[in-house]
Amino acid sequence: MEHIKSQSQGLVTTDREHGHEESDINVKAIFGFALFLLIGGIVAHVALWGMYVYLDRRAEKANEGVATPVQLQVAAQQSAATEKKSAQGGQVGEKHAETSKEVLQRLQAQFPAPRLQDDDVRDMHMLRANEDKMIGGYTWIDKNGGVVRIPVSRAMEVIAERGLPNVAPETTQSGAAKPASPATPAKQ
Image 1: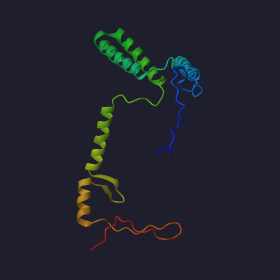
Image 2: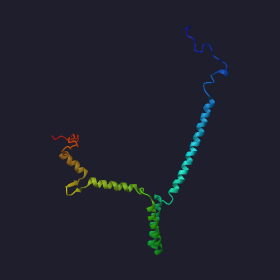
Image 3: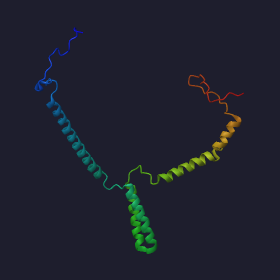
């Protein structure tokens, strides 16, 4: 093992002032770059904040005089309250109720479309009720053609008893027949 020499080849320093190579890293440049990033980040945040303030003020100016859904609802409630008072109070209240109705109509005319849903739960219940009526009841689709919509449960029973109907294959524009769909069961 005498032929193996250490990498330092005996040049080990014990001097504390010269313990490492100082030209490997520039500490001033690293701190300068970190300071540049910090200042740049602060400037970018301030610039974005200023832009949002400007855009917010611009949007407020553009929306002056346009009624919000909350304003429409408050106007409707005030109109209903004044109508109730006018029914009890006499002719002076009726004149005031007419004015609030006009205000409500003006606000509704100013509010741009599409308007937001007032009661989404009620709308969903109405949608589901209509769908349940469609899939659970009998209705005519075409009286002259004899086409009737039947409940889904009854349609499933009919398909279970009779099977799916055989339908002639459709032809493409070139005149070749399309292959039969795999959903068509084979008759036994």
